Length: 315
Length: 294
Image (cartoon, rainbow over all chains, first blue to last red; front, top):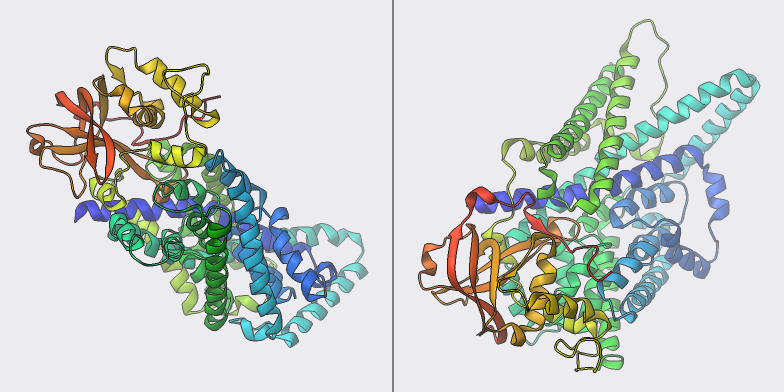
């Protein structure tokens, strides 16, 4: 009993220590976006057409190479600043896979299988596009847990504008003060958001640690050896394990003698898109209905894709 | 009134952030951080500590500054839509949630993952099967540099290591080459059968082992405890029952092949074994050697 408690505690703290630095990067980026980039500037950057919007969301991870923990605050902020939610979802799904850090670590984990990182990227891309096509058809606000109130946004905007005007009027001696105010505002935002995301992270880490300490892997493996689909099994496993997408390739490798490469890919792609932590953190931003629809869509497309790769390439 | 509620929120945030940062710094000073996270992630943890300190100090500063009498009130609070709910129940939940891990770290002592976790995760007794599977083309004998240990591109470092090890009277398994040495032994297990080996590690057990069997090994880690894998070598001994789980032992014996779980598993048939409780490793986990094969 005591051994179990110790393992559990070590696991929770380990997962937290691994994720928190990236949450911190996320909340700092998010706070900087809030104070330094105006809504109008941001909206000028965002593509209007659906297809380019989805592509934009898929490739944003190359510029922001953070894993899912760091992405949540950034995505939340971008949506609040007027980015269409469907692009946010696509970014959220594709970002943790389609980024240089994850590609590199996958490449290192599978030394003489350079096709694995390529397939991983392609499969994530395909799944994200499918999700994006669905999400783009739903009216943006109905996906969010706290819809962005257009009135409030406009009040905020005009408020900002008024403030700016006043500052312009008051000569340059005040510009130093404005800089200080921005500095304070950024740090305050970051601190508040750290707690906001933190509670979901702690809950997720707790559940993941509990499952890792209570459910035995041999039992899980025996499930996988049954008549069931191994790809589906590996997806469930990656969901439960909640390993960061930059490190999960090294975990996937340990399954390689028992499982096909297609099922390893399913593990790598689905686990990066969804796990216990990220589901909870997504529920903070999006409605439960949206989160579970996206979960189902990504599960179906990853499953189909990985089975296809197994049949066609490794078969 | 609103000022005081804001004051309280900022003080709580500052307290929790400082507590977190202090715990990490304390763990760093007492070398306890290695229980949770791999050395190569330390840069990130340092960044986290600095960031949390900055945020905590800033929260203290804002809190005090805003309630000091006679000062112009700083308007640092923002009007953004998402923060309405911060001064309510959900904020308390957030503080509570982040305070729990802080409590956990303070109440319980630091301990390495144990045999229970090892059994739960399933011991890896044949580390080379991963290598073989990912190395691709297999390792057909090549008239290359080493006919005794056939290898291809990705298994060559292991072949070289095996060639080095096999001529030693007692093959050592050093701490900084733990994973690599065990992988080499397993990869060329047919050649190593009958050789003497000395292995230190924790005693683990797994379902399906006979009464005279257990395993000796360590947890290997990549980034943090979530990705640890218990790496071990099967051991055979007449009075195996005397050796309890989680003991740290130093065993010497001959390698023989046994069949376990449908696989051929290199097994150390123990000639002599001692518990070395006073020589526990500095670092509870083993890591890939970054210079291996370079």
